[in-house]
Length: 287
Image (cartoon, rainbow, N blue to C red; front, side, top):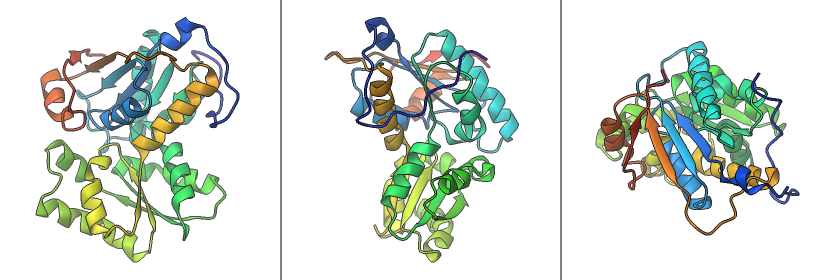
């Protein structure tokens, strides 16, 4: 064990500890199997532009979606151990597959805050739903893990959960397809059983999926609330930084560092669709 159990996520309005400046100056680590976590970076930049961010994409082993939970668990802890050695102040698991496989254990392993993507999205969905019928879109490994189902059940709100794996969406997004007729057809097929079940709220259970909001809005005719895990995570990070006394309270913008285990040029080419200002990317082959 690297440290003691982490504290629960801080709620807005909770009393905040004033940190030593050195603690607040440490970066936030954001990591994913590839480029999808850049949607979380983008959301963090909107809420916390002054924070230093370090991003790692495990592109050499991506995609994680078809892998086993055991493999994803192992990869996640390899990455988190490396991030902790870089003296970060928070771990943000910007990947649904890694959150499903490793979040619970990671929260109790490291002595810095750990934020996953599932619980923030679930809380937002429960607040948004009116008929208590919630749909979840995700990769096969995320849906197959059952973590969204368990997290929604744990809210005690007696919601009905309808999950749909969408194996083709990630490749479509990374290939730059956000609007083709084929993509719309795929979305209609994936969403048909959820719409038939009368869901009024839909969790985008993959960090690639916020880029598909236009298509999903079209297919649902705007009648379904779309919950982005990226935006929900950013709000949780802000609250946790305040409650833990780790917020960087300065006016200047924070620094950004992007690292990948695979080809940095390919990452930059694809990642610029998620984060247009993406420039320098380092190759750091941890795997």
